[in-house]
Amino acid sequence: MTVAARPGRGRRPWRAPLALLVIAMLIAVVSVASCAPRLNAPGPAIARPALAADGFLAADGEKLPLRTWMPEDGAPRAVIVALHGFNDYSNFFTDPGTFLATQGIATYAYDQRGFGQTRQPGLWSGVGAYADDLKAVTEAVRRRHPGVPLYLLGESMGAAVIMVAMTGPGAPEVDGIILSSPAVWGRSTMPWYQRLALWLGAHTVPWMTVTGRGLGIKPSDNIEMLRALRRDPLVIKETRVDSIYGLVNLMDAALESAAAFDRAALILYGARDEVIPMGPTRAMVRHLPPSAGRRQRLALYEDGYHMLLRDLQALTVWVDIAAWIADPGAPLPSGADERAQTILAKDPGAEEPPAVP
Image (cartoon, rainbow, N blue to C red; front, side, top):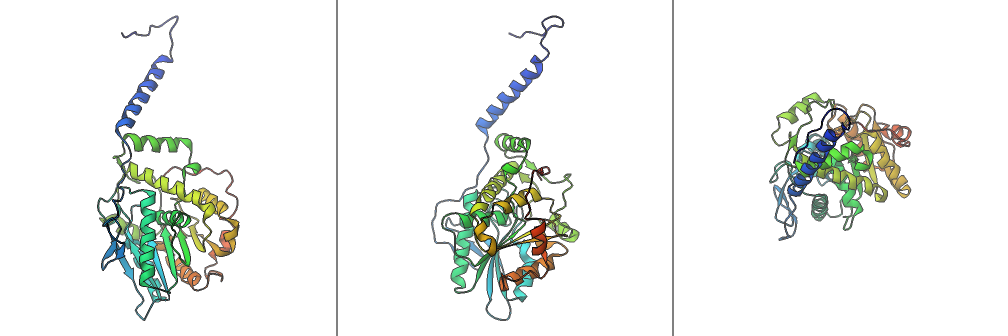
């Protein structure tokens, strides 16, 4: 039976909006019952992980495309395993890898599951899957280059994967870690309405795709590079909502892992980063263990954006990376480590991060 509200005495003007709210909640509950974030999890282990000629064969048989940059004048003095950021792929390291090869440093960069030339691009595979793949690739690279110093380098999402992998069980032995613009924008640093919107989207329309167009976010000052990314069919342009949800799960885990991240590390951040706000980055720095202070170096680049390794001033960053690998105790050639102590390492305070990109 339907009762229409009559004007005049006894009218309840709040009933209509309340009814709409109840209906909306019921729709959401029904939707949640039928929708959930899709997870493209790895299958059971069927083989020993190994490096192949053109990729890395994971334990479940998944092939992860691999790119390498090797010194031309003999055996490498150091080796890097590099991880790309969200929606990107191993091609991100072409320019820095080419430069570092001239410094005697070899690099292995692979496409993470759901990105680049892997199967089912655009689907998220889970925090554990990405961490396990990194451990397996690192061990395989170590076997190929026994006795050579080994470093991990991650950009954004890749840096978050490294933080999680290196603070969990079965972490591989490495000589140092380089984190470039680490993705540590966890839920604890987001306003409640962003967290709610993300949860609702992932549990009602997980298949829906979104783009960053219209947000006005500038990831780099290297416009030609950004145009090339837009033309590259292997760079994901439209992102599933449940993949964003998975990324935030990873950023949660990375931020939480900071308290246990006591490895020798070079942590790079651009003062003009519009993708990962400085507030969450300062929160990560604040939670790093005091015991690792002498072995960890912060570097803040005044003209750096989120894509530090591909910005117009990227060469400055590459030189700092090579110098830190050569002598972790020496000041960085750019002086970015001195700036970080006065700006990046201060108390994050109560500043509120901008909208989710």
